[in-house]
Image (cartoon, rainbow, N blue to C red; front, top):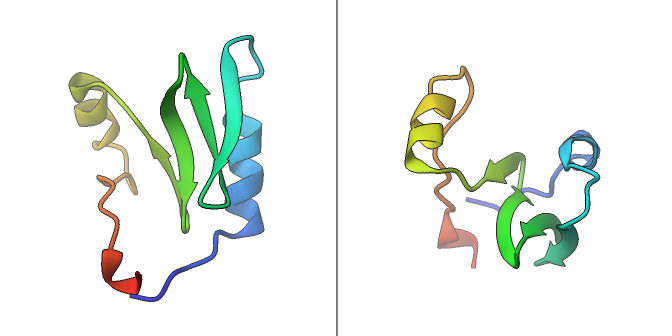
Length: 78
């Protein structure tokens, strides 16, 4: 699978939905935006997806949303 560069729409959406509150730190990882709280990454961009780190229950609930899927990076492009 060839690496997909994130679209401007994905990057803009990420910027809009990251909370603008004290304690949220924005960084770049592999050149893409990510968000941390208490030094733990909880949200980021990977190719054409916005990824979230959720509790098991929240993940189960989230996966019931149409279009949501579990994050599984494909390392064949490395």
